[in-house]
Length: 86
Ligand SMILES: [Zn+2]
Image (cartoon, rainbow, N blue to C red; front, side, top):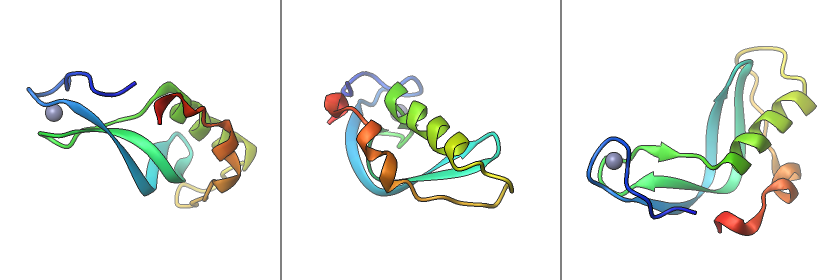
């Protein structure tokens, strides 16, 4: 799923599993743990798969974020993350 050219430079987007990643959402931030994202090996731009963005939306709406500064952890939604990007 990763390994494609970066949109912003000559680098290549590599899969990277991070402990915590904060996703900006309309109503605040959603934090996913142990999530695999794409990171450009040259400029460091981060790319998120459709599965991840879907999970962020699901968490945001399921948990009913009410304040812009409210953060959530989302271990529960890891079952929604398909292994296709692993
Ligand atoms: Zn880049």
